[in-house]
Image (cartoon, rainbow, N blue to C red; front, side, top):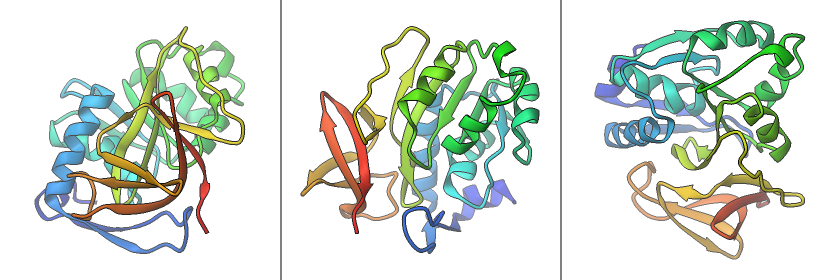
Length: 226
């Protein structure tokens, strides 16, 4: 994949299909640039960062969460097919990695997980429901764990919260935490989250199709709206 070309021309990617039928979404240059800037700010990505990419680049998380923002500033990027045992072995040589919740759970079940120290490494987790239990497990390993919400149409670093060891992890029955800080305008109408901003591919308010609650500044995901 030609990352330089994407920065200059934009790209059309398909949605993951986890929230409905997969469909193509064009990512314009101005949206990509704005999203890259926010991604670097939230995840503390700089030219000195070392990114381990294990999510596929044909979807928003793998391409836009860390890879393209890091490429734009000349950071080191290594792209590997995900293998939980290999990830645990490699991660301490890097500063950042982005995992889906399923990947995050898989690495915690490897034989060497108990011995790993993730001090100062930034792990971002999103693309599906991130359980509070997973957050607890990772921050006990001393990493900065970012629970994140985004979509192919917005973000992907759009709503998130950064956890560090010792922080209280919130639980809400039948809901998953999205974050407490939004990098877009938000409103909730009839329990559905609407978003608008420069990191959205649409100019007007976008109905996400996600049923969401906001309690004490935290956004909580309930379910997809039929």
